[in-house]
Image (cartoon, rainbow, N blue to C red):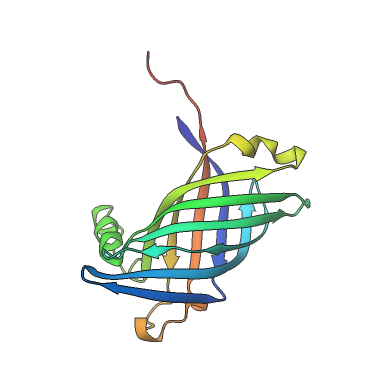
Length: 170
């Protein structure tokens, strides 16, 4: 198998809500966030959606985001994104292992996952059975203390690539 770049999604969360569920084993967070942005690449257009992740007690976000891409050529594509927003500690560990640690990654967290799409637009029907991988980052403003950080100032960037079938070895 190989990956073929499909689009880059850049978005923010203009509105968000959070519930902290406390229990004997720690606190689990439940979030609901609206998302607005754009895609650029083989699929280019406006994006709107909602993300309702759960933040586990280890600091990892379990992403559960659905949205709509309205392409520049007027197609409507529904998208389903699942995966993990890695914890600050895990992201730092992986940036360090890849020799990428530094000022640029100090205010970033990694996102990994997959995407599925559905559309009735003839030009994009090939997406209906495509499985896509995504790698992204949550990019917080540099130097803003976490207690003063507003969700709307955080930018998210996903690279979405189609997984292209290649037969496994005989």
